[in-house]
Figure 1 (cartoon, rainbow, N blue to C red):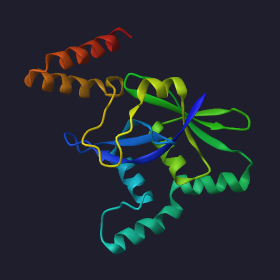
Figure 2 (figure 1 turned 180 degrees about the vertical axis):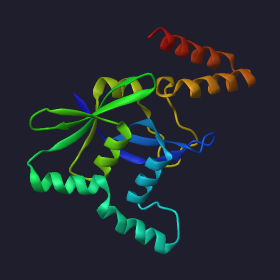
Figure 3 (figure 1 turned 90 degrees about the vertical axis):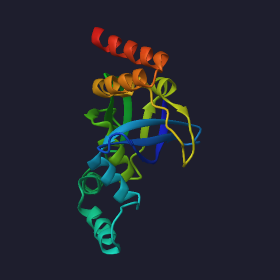
Figure 4 (figure 1 turned 90 degrees about the horizontal axis):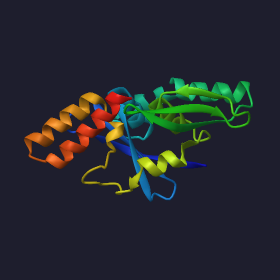
Length: 193
């Protein structure tokens, strides 16, 4: 079983300006999950959401530029040349990285795709739904906090090893030993696998 997702927005990570969080919710906006994205993906999603920062001329240019971007062009070419109906499915998480597939819904043929690229493709083409496997959703999602959250819940298994080490040191420095222990256990679990 799969859960259909929608993009709610992007939140910048204050400690690291090169990383942002893509907020995804279920259709009923009851639960959410976050995916780490880089600066380039943050920029691409901002343009498509009409949240591009710049002068009026820069915003107009960015909107006009979308018709020539790969997700939009690829979507148009696929519709014109084939009868393929794609969806993007987030299928797993391993070592802090989600994995996804671009799947032909008619044949079940699947192609691996980076999660952020799959989300962008689904956002660029409203006919390409974004899904997640229900068991993964149940394990990774948290209660949706709305449009203006004061913080975002982020499962430890979605963070890179370097981010975990930094967070563990920060917890130790702030004398949050229980949280530091949880992070240490996640690092040890990854070292074993």
